[in-house]
Length: 333
Image 1 (cartoon, rainbow, N blue to C red):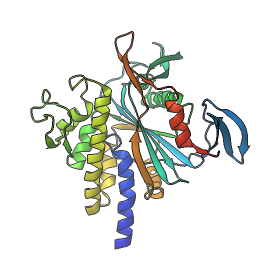
Image 2 (image 1 turned 120 degrees about the vertical axis):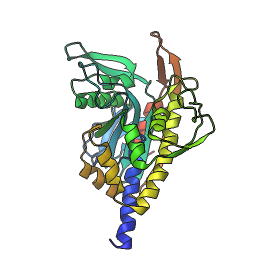
Image 3 (image 1 turned 90 degrees about the vertical axis):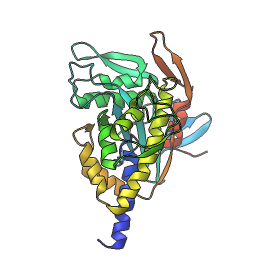
Image 4 (image 1 turned 60 degrees about the vertical axis):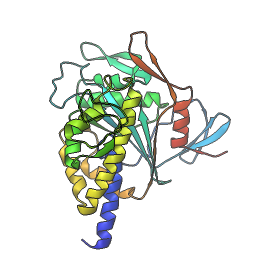
């Protein structure tokens, strides 16, 4: 391989790695997003501009973007080999990251969604049939379905409901035990702990800088109730910290071995459910290798204890709509 081709291959693989480690996992982007449904937001459709829909929102005019790709990455609180007993045993989605690839503007947007975010979720009865929707924590959506694919599709639907009806093209769901697999194939990552996890591992004290073992990575990414105040926002911060460290580790390895990203994908195969092929993922990475990757964002809102005693996150009024308008629409006037 020539030096020029090798450099290009490295750039391509790094972009894929940025998305993959959005879960503590290295992933990429999907295909064109040209045939989408209109965003169901608090606006009024006036007319079309060619194939671009125009909407009025808060007194301003926006045109719908075309040539987008959307991918929902999920981390499931369930081991790969754990048995499933019915249509309500799919496991909760403890981690949700929506990736939006804008091929026209050459940017990649990332929205991390709090697992406790309240939204409309389609629920299943004991016989495995959909019985309507309820306002529940979004993490519960993945639990409903008669197969891993139905579980993922239900989580996608709940995310679309939260985000004003936008359409999500692709999903990748990885089970809890994939965390150790990812860390293992990366050879571990180095982080400085912002929380005290010493009750779970004596070495994991607040402020310590550690090259995480596979077991420590699982603790770091999965633990919640016994750490700090036990909030999901604290764990989300650890997810972002791991992502940053994993990206740097991945970059170093790709400089030496460009084909390493294939090892990461292959190692995780069998521990994930996805509706995108390996080849399509790599093709999309090749198309977007030089795009600007925007910082991970979250929705503003508040946490509260629900009437059932469980934590809830209520997105601020208009927060989801604002993010959709910024990401899926162009301001015209």
